[in-house]
Image: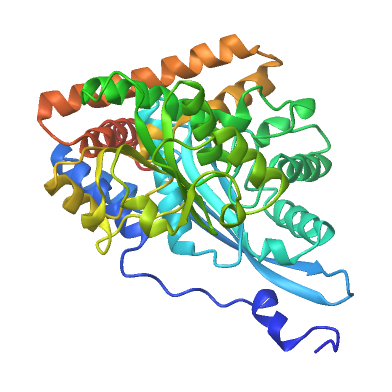
Length: 435
């Protein structure tokens, strides 16, 4: 062992696979898929194909650390279904990265693309690395090695990357450069969420939040919530939660609670969202915020009486142990799988409607599609065009799901999954099984 590497660091350099929780994201995803497939009467052979990823790729990512020692990280890319087109999916850099969650995320991406009528299948991947503990140089070397090893399996016509946990437009730029160097041609359509100077689309920074904003307007009308300012709680203050809080505050709504990893900030009279977000950007976590508001835990936040609760932070934020404490009139899922399958049943029993993730947070998928199209065709759309087209995609997906809800008398989660599964199954039937 290199004497410069402390024993405490070894768990970061050689992490073990985390154990699975009782309520896993994969179980949550599969429960929704199974119910939709059963309701649709999907034939046995197609069901067997759709419930398994097309490919699971595992790679080693050796990285020379700044102190001269070598660390070998685990890298993954799960490619779920190519029935509707090339794969599209996020890249995560996480110490506790779980293959189980990547499988769930890849499948969610398939269903999300399908319900939004975007011509992609779903994928997901990442590197098991404790990103905050490593320098920018170490992260860059890990990302570039990961991209290089996967070069034959990704690209504009194969599998397109999108940013996610601990990956941003800078990391997307490194991937573009690495893949382009190997292909000997610029392959900027292999990555979305890039800097605009490299072909990234306008609006990608707050795409998920903009899509949620559209869905919120449609949902409040359908569920007959008050016409005046709504009292809204948002779990998460990052790219999705923070941007959504800003947009909804600009629309005149009261954001009475928001949180980050450090805890929650609550103000029954409405938070000064601009001040809160500025604090996070310049000063630190919310538990150190010194402006108006009370500090609390995420458990306190999720139990706040409100009109709309929007969990934007993590999978299974609402589970069997805290679902009974939820006191909202409507839940809109901003994260992937923030409501476990058990919590979903509890909330439904308590009369709280839920707008599912594959419908609600699809703005990022739509914007990735826009970026991919612009890169391939040499377009550069202006903001009004992008916003209008985003609203159209989100509204059409909502209308398709609501039509199933009303026609089949099923919950909106079931309806959205039925739309998605039906589209993917139809494509697989037409393709047939090649053997």
